[in-house]
Length: 114
Image (cartoon, rainbow, N blue to C red):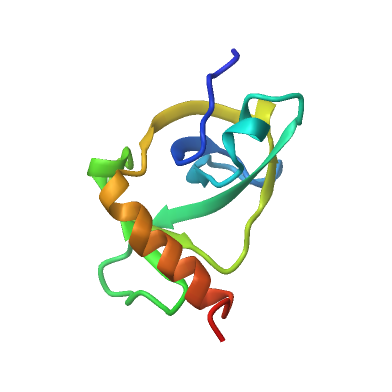
C-alpha cells in the first residue's frame, strides 16, 4: 500500500522491527523527501500519555485533534529514521496552531537557541 505522505502527517509505524506494536509518529522530513525517491524518513515517535506521568523537557503532547487516538507524548530530542514501507496508515496531520509549540519544543530540546 503506497501512502501519499507529507511533512507533519501523523502516521502509524513500528520504529523497531522487533516491537510488538505500532505507534504514532510525526513525519519531520520535508515534502521533497516524502514524495521523492528516498526510502527513509525522519519522524518524532509517540507513546501513550500515562495519567500519573508528567511531561519532561523535550516532550510535547498531542491529541485527537492531530489524529492521535488518545493523548500521546512525542519525544523531541531524538529523530528516528523509518523506512517508508514500514508506515502502515496515515492517522491525521499536526494542526497548524500546534506546529509552533512543536518547533519551540524541538529547538529547546536540542538547545538551538543558545
